[in-house]
Length: 127
Image (cartoon, rainbow, N blue to C red; front, top):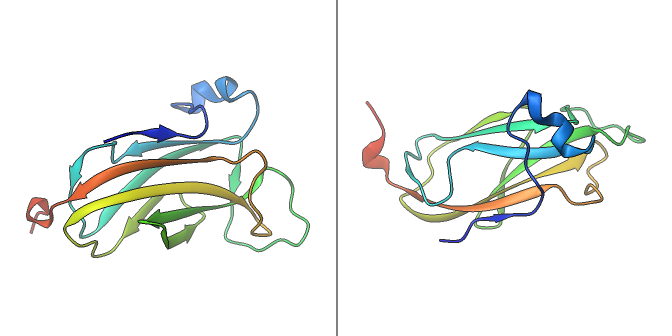
């Protein structure tokens, strides 16, 4: 499986300088190629130099917006949280992609996002 990172990632708050002051997005979990529980699928990220909000703002500052979460190209969440729980993802192989968008719903320029591939196996879910 191939991991495609479309923007240099920064790993923690201490690494925000590595982003050059630009918004960046790091996926902490799941990792590329991992086998995970899908009930729910926990997606844990770190967002730097960007303020997540659930508000729609007509003329937003360039560093304010939300995150999109996609499975196989279909949007499953739009969020202002760094951790997202996607309910009841079926067993199988999935492309998980994330991106940041401005609070007016326009794409960031340059694009900030990433793509990984995971396998969901719900026998791994506890309880």
